[in-house]
Length: 82
Image (cartoon, rainbow, N blue to C red; front, side, top):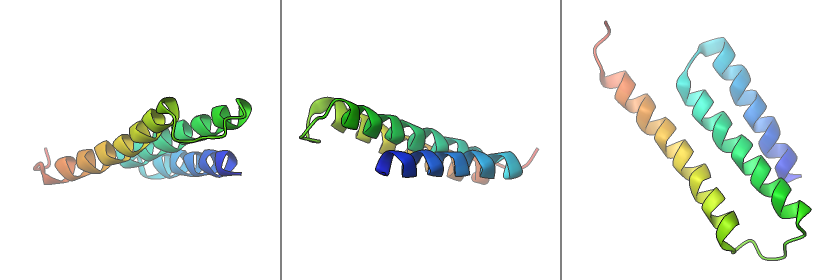
């Protein structure tokens, strides 16, 4: 269910990007698609412990993508138009 929910969230952010062309939505979509793949691999392998290195690294990248998107949005809004 978490895998599906993350994939749906990613699709929604792609839709928001298509209507608004804001790169923040692409960063969020990439993060949620990564989380969806991470959860699918976790379920496929039948892993019992989420605290193993590959899953934690994927989750770290997930949060870093969101952070980079927020920083990118803030830096672009500070630049003068032109």
